[in-house]
Image (cartoon, rainbow, N blue to C red; front, top):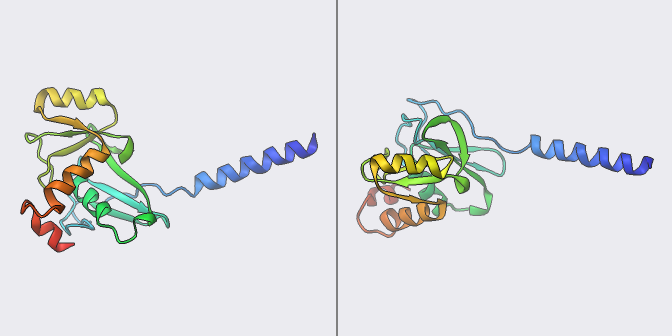
Length: 164
């Protein structure tokens, strides 16, 4: 019985240590931090996003589309720990990009012009969709939009690709 208790205690301690070491989104200094992809000043909390690498370093972006472009062109994609986006309705709440719902609407402009905003629940995205129209997409579709619009060399935001 004592051995089982010791094992449970050790496993519990290990779990606490592992979760305590998980990288978390870092604060963004709006008006002074620059995006790691486009080098634009980050000014709008509803669109700012970040990637955390396996060492816990935060790479910050002024828009979801810049973060997606950075992720798609990363030299070492295996070193990306997580992608984080702000909940458009509550920008202080960080969402893992893979779990968020996105509105792609040409009437709700994001800083870099690909019209992407993120939401914690599909219902929230649908409410904004009623006002701004557009389509609700997932993280993989966001990356495909960025790949097609920016990285495929269609001329649309080609300067962003050239800067990276």
